[in-house]
Length: 322
Ligand SMILES: Nc1nc2c(ncn2[C@@H]2O[C@H](COP(=O)(O)OP(=O)(O)OP(=O)(O)O)[C@@H](O)[C@H]2O)c(=O)[nH]1
Ligand SMILES: [Mg+2]
Image 1 (cartoon, rainbow, N blue to C red):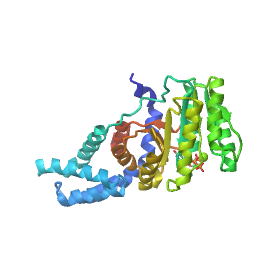
Image 2 (cartoon, protein in one colour):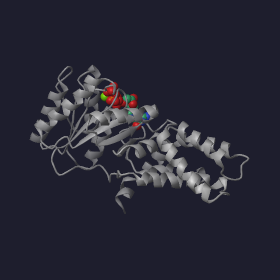
Image 3 (cartoon, rainbow, N blue to C red):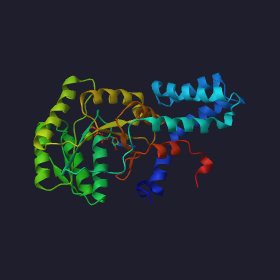
Image 4 (tube, protein in one colour):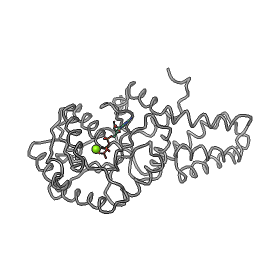
């Protein structure tokens, strides 16, 4: 049994299939309407496929690459059957994403340094705190000693929300209360985690608009405080992106990766959105991997992102579900 089989049981597969339902329906409904009355793939149909990919939030840049690949195939086989189109599309998306420089991670990893420090950043409401709870839960399931730190000192409720997650998970909780300097929280939490022999320290931050320079610079300061406290840390800076915001998520990713040393992405709220195609655009356009995806609000509804599983699920036909 490979690592992925262990991570990816029946429940995970079902969650993924269910969460991609809307993306899939929107996409294939449009595709089958475009195909009606046509026997083979021509330029006009490819134009329609282009529009469908763009409207599924794959993004212009990635869509153009996919269409170019399809055009190559069509020019080699002028009588390509429309029935083969979705398989062809699946193949081209799979190879496009396999060509990307980033690798899928192999599970909830920690490095050799203890504590393994993870800083979580992103704009308001994207699912930072929830993702921290889910991550802490997964690490706890592995028997790791986890601490979560309240670096969002901006909102009164933020502290309580994070504390509730720590209680649900059974992890340690570090807070200096509302109004404290987030860099001081990060510094002291790192010290405390070292002292308490914590395996994984996850630090929350306040939501910030990627267009606000001061707030973006503050992230640099938080990172430096952690490094000062524990040389070599933070080991991961995870940027949280909300799939329901579609192309906006791509813009946020550009801005955050310009300012902060982002090492990985979490794409949340894939459930209940038709904009799941954004995962394809992000995987293609950034050299930073999507590490995890959020497929529901429950504590267990986070998955290690795997390109193949994602594309397989996206192209799964109703009849294939057993
Ligand atoms: N359906 C769904 N909802 C999610 C997911 N992740 C987070 N949410 C919901 O998104 C909302 C915001 O989540 P938070 O974790 O508070 O977001 P945040 O980024 O910490 O927000 P701020 O601290 O205000 O910036 C909550 O209602 C969560 O339940 C997901 O994967 N699926
Ligand atoms: Mg929060």
